[in-house]
Image (tube, rainbow, N blue to C red):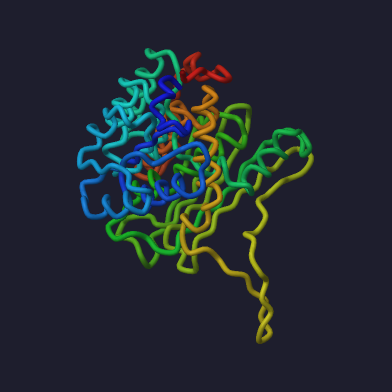
Length: 351
């Protein structure tokens, strides 16, 4: 990263956070309290009161009402984008125009075509600056399973199984929302765990108690991937009992799956029980911390290491195919073009 002298003399990267709601506020507080090597220099939100509150809690960061103005400010060196989905691609492109590393929450864009625009802009730039917020890649339980699968200990991985349950569906959510805002994490996990691209999807669904008529809050997704690999994903956004995510990778010689969440097992009144997290912020708190710490370190080192713009694009192509399958009731192919060379490289420089 150039212009290190801007960092107030202490060498910390000056980060601007777009969006100060639940996700953006969490990122800002994590950067301020838990991440070494970074300082929250600015925050941006259309809600001035909320932005001011988060800015004060993060050491008196500057407050901007306009996200583009904040990104363009010389006092911001890197950007976390946690604003509403339709703003993501525009803000990422602004960061690319200015050569500023950015961590964008999923989805990268509102469509595969828009996401491809980000990929093409980054390829033209010739260096990777975009990371997408697929935080499961940093969750210790998921990383343990990935490491076992990659080690060859269970033989060649051939099947991914994922389950993803939210306690309660948001008001107004439809089948497409379930795919884009929930299942997209699982689609990325399948690609990452099996080190393969999705070729075909088939989605079945049910309407349970909380969803709008005709919409599926419970979805069973079947995937065919390159290399002759398969996957199944259960997504239930109205499970009622709490928030739970887990995966299993089946190899030709054995399997590996995520351990249960940590916490005391209580035996009382002839019942043995363990708490279940309430939501994703609680379940993946450690993953978010690790994600941000490694992102900051990658900027300092000049070598991006996290899920990139191509991962954001490929996940959206698969998500769009899932939505098409829901509408058609049939399997749908996933057309993914050849990956640009930029995303094949290890350690693409971000300086």
